[in-house]
Image 1: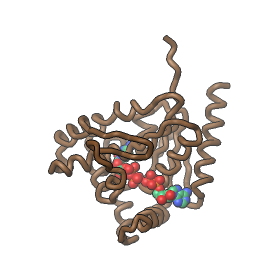
Image 2: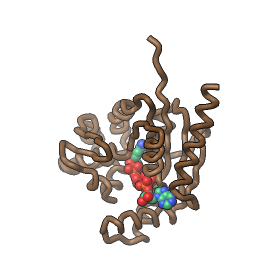
Image 3: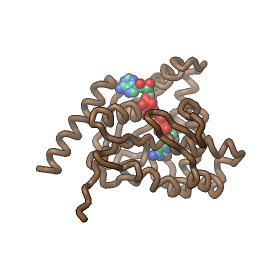
Length: 226
Ligand SMILES: Nc1ncnc2c1ncn2[C@@H]1O[C@H](COP(=O)(O)OP(=O)(O)O)[C@@H](O)[C@H]1O
Ligand SMILES: Nc1ccn([C@H]2C[C@H](O)[C@@H](COP(=O)(O)OP(=O)(O)O)O2)c(=O)n1
């Protein structure tokens, strides 16, 4: 039987660069599915902590990842049937996600689950290794970034809007620490691939960033089917 290829747009980049915002909007504009791969690492960290498992216990955390009872519903994320949408955005959960993400067995346990999101008419996926490991044949790969100070300021505004009391210097420190860990790990490190297009949003609005990805997709698909 002839298999219809499923188009994938892979958007990778560092913390608070705007990947999730841009990826979700691009998916909505195209009418495609959306994968927030970081949410799976966040849910794994949250579930492991909830069971009192140390985040560097590779065997135990990978079992949690393999058995993760997570549901993605129209912008809502459930963990074991409970709404975890807001909880997983906590900065401590992000830090925990970055810790479990260095464990190769955890990454392997989550691999197929991420690939299962690829369904017609297409998928926009954001994370750190979408273009390198999870969807190496993606039709379009984007490395979306912004300067660390701008990213800290975006995260600061996001957390303040949620009513959290936060310190911008601390956020910048956390972002730099997370960047360093995500780039230095041996398995699936954060990197700009040679075949990924660079989108530096430091001085771009969200609308322009979204439009740029849509324009790149238009020309990539035109070339692919020409
Ligand atoms: N180009 C941009 N200009 C200004 N703010 C942005 C831009 N892109 C994203 N943001 C804001 O930055 C914050 C972090 O974006 P988010 O999508 O959560 O980043 P990531 O998924 O990379 O961690 C959000 O509040 C978002 O609205
Ligand atoms: N594909 C992915 C997605 C996230 N991770 C890890 C690394 C990140 O620090 C954490 C959290 O990712 P997430 O994208 O939710 O975090 P940010 O919103 O970018 O701060 O998970 C990963 O290793 N691989």
